[in-house]
Amino acid sequence: MKDNVCLDKDTEPPDEETEPPGKDPCLSSIPPIISASSSVTLTSLLFPDSKKNHRTGPRHEHSGARFTISPRSEAFRKKFFPEVSISDWNDWHWQLGNRIRTREMLSRILRLSKSELGALLNRRTPLPVSVTPYYAGLLDADNPLQALRRTVIPVESECMHARGEDDDPLNEEKDSPVPGLVHRYPDRVLFLVTDFCSTYCRYCTRSRMVGKRSEDCLSRGNWEPALRYIEKNAQIRDVLLSGGDPLTLSNHRLEWLLSRLRRISHVELIRIGTKVPVVLPQRITPALTRMLKRYHPLWMSIHFTHPDELTPETRHACGRLADAGIPLGSQTVLLAGVNDDVEIMKRLVHGLLQLRVKPYYLYQCDPISGSFHFRTPVQTGLDIIRGLRGHTTGYAVPTYVIDAPGGGGKIPLLPEYVAGREGDSLILTNYEGKAFRYPDCGGSGAGN
Image 1 (tube, rainbow, N blue to C red):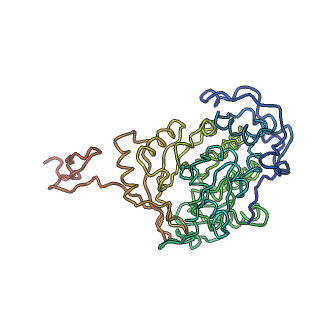
Image 2: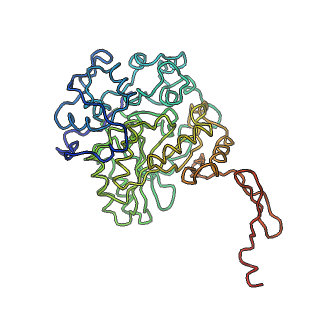
Image 3: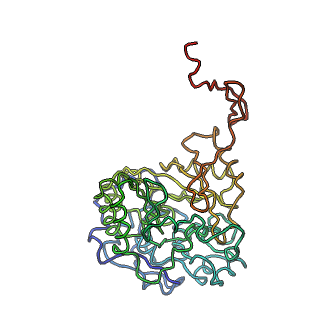
């Protein structure tokens, strides 16, 4: 099983990773970066074949040094990649080229459990394994139950198929008029522009399709049918770019796509769905944000899972995006043993607001094949919303939704706050469980 990285090196603008001299304004709100080393040689100790993936050249050598590196990442780099300079570590091309994808590579940095080893030896797991070195540095080497580790390292439960699970539970293929496009809601479409992610989440809704192509990565020719469909349907005003992860595309390819969409007069809004700022924050370069600013109104939905992802690197990446005027929202999947706790979720949403990211959706985990060990009772999600509403700012409370199996779309769920009626009064309960009356006469008694 092979997946390909759309680096598109030969067609990128020559100045893609350069940035003007001077201080990056985002750095003022995060811990200082550690001084860059002068070494550019990849380690031959941990991953002896990693040299072949390395890209050298002044275009990347200096831009990475201006991105932050947390003490935890620096310790991990020194332990497992001692010959890799900070400049290279902070180069998103290097991170992509050195993803950790095999049992042998994982066993060098993690003490694998029996279940993890079994899954890695089982070729029937629905997703390939891929973890960026940066994100691998956040994993607990000794605890297979650590939240972040459970989300990216497979276990044997992935190979089990429970009742009600399906490879395409949302029936996206039924609503796909052309390859790569899902048109479920009247005024908006989901445009799957790549099947590649830098890091694969084990509960991915599209595990049936991502990371499995053996041919070259998606090209402009693959996008043309979808673009023609959007052009011909004037009711489409909102396009969500997803995949895979659109931010794994090169600046050149992503800008080509954005410019094509912006030439369609009835497309008012473009959104990007991504986990890159969380698993590959080095990708958020000044060159990328300068390019994205040209295509406003542009919004971004970022997939956050747990407060341990709120690192100095992620803060830096989100700061660059927010400073570029891009509204940021978070989409979080509710996962058993990962974030199914009010206090964990409160830490996450409070941290997100500090990063200028609005908690947007809390998703009930989709019933994809092999997801039973991740799925919680719906009541758990309702209890979390009840534990947030009234106990923290409304900005921090996401909308809890189930993406209905069979293609029914997103259905919001709320705790029961309407206790009943007495005459013209609605009886409501607040976050403390106290009852209050609201005169629900609808203006019928005005002037009497």
